[in-house]
Amino acid sequence: MIDTLRLTAEAANDLLTAGEVSSDELFSAYLAAIGERDPELHAYLHVCDDSPGEGIPIAIKDVIGTKGVPTTAGSKILENYVPVFDSTVAARCKARGLRLLGKTNTDEFAMGSSTENSAYGPSRNPWDPARVPGGSGGGSAAAVSGGLAPWALGSDTGGSIKQPAALCGHVGLRPTYGTVSRYGVVAFASSLDQVGPVAKNVRDCAFLYSVIAGRDENDSTTVDVPAVELPTLEDLKGLRIGVPKEMNEAEGIEPGVTAAVRAAIELAESLGAEVGECSLPRSVEYGVACYYLVAPAEASSNLGRYDGARYGLRSDGADFREMLMNTRHDGFGDEPKRRIMIGTYALSSGYYDAYYGKAQRVRTMIRREHADVFEKFDLIVSPTSPTVAFKLGEKAGNPLAMYLNDLLTIPSCMAGLPGMNIPAGLSEGLPVGLQLIGPQFSENTLFRAGHALEQAIGFDIVPERLR
Ligand code: GLN
Image: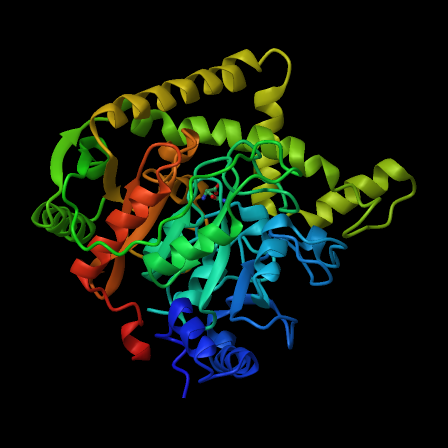
């Protein structure tokens, strides 16, 4: 019997190499789990009955292009879109024999923090189906936490890998901007979008990162990355960990979240880390506001390609202009429309300097503030999400409340820095996420620290009600 809830990708691969299971048996075990639990969790928008490869399975977020397999980005405007080429990340997974299980649910164009903005209905949290799995990559999170995939790819613009990992109790890495190719990935905000791994533990996360990272000639922002070191050490000797006070004492952080994160920080100290306080005052105060100018500005430009003419949905209209207007009216949901309006406004002549220009200057300030902190520390820690998983519908009617859920994940994204979530413990029976952030290209440090802490914390990733 293959226990898909507990089996890590590494363990699955060991079974495969030892000849104890076949690739087909593994694939079927996940399909069976999907058949059993996906009707409740709705982690997948599309399930592949079969796919080529000799390795273990993987799920891929539906903003990531997969040749011959529907890629909707959670939007009605792409409901009939089947890419004719693979994204670089999908191609790299395939080249390693990984078999595509299916495409996972996402807020429309990755805009959201709960999957409630998906045109195809929300996913649910495996710990409590009345609650959201986070977003935008809630589908990948629910799949990994619910035993419907050993691991998955997500994408993160302002927290979409880290926050769902926090809410569903697993590991997720947003890599340094420029380490993973965006070629073939549906663009939301190009200066922020990064693809990254979603996994059951830090070693799997590190391995999957090594599969997808590195220079790609089809994405000129990518660079070669340091060789990935699979973490083995269980101590944190010599590591300097900063605790930014604004990110640990921000208004709205639930007491149960603070308690779990504090306990993890104490554990880090007992493992030999030197822990000290630091400060990121302006990053926390202005991060979200700055993000909600830069990201919508870029989105308003990126979404301009959906015109009904070349691919995707096309509505009727008497002439081109009317067809275009009807297509966008019918095809985009409320959140993309809201962001197109904000972004277009921020970029319009007369307002450009006051909004977009100013946001870019604030972004530079945020980057500098982080750089200063990393003069003294190897990494910094905070809660990933100020709250545990919230109920479906709780914030759906209030965009601002939804945006504020990303308070702690956004600043480092604006600075282009890598961040990882590991589970820190439970609060009221729901997972609490610990966020580790490092300077550019410090993934190996994050893996080392994350692995040691993960061993010490001993969090059981299988949702209590499914044990
Ligand atoms: N929740 C944030 C937003 O709505 C971040 C989403 C993401 O990282 N894709 O934009």
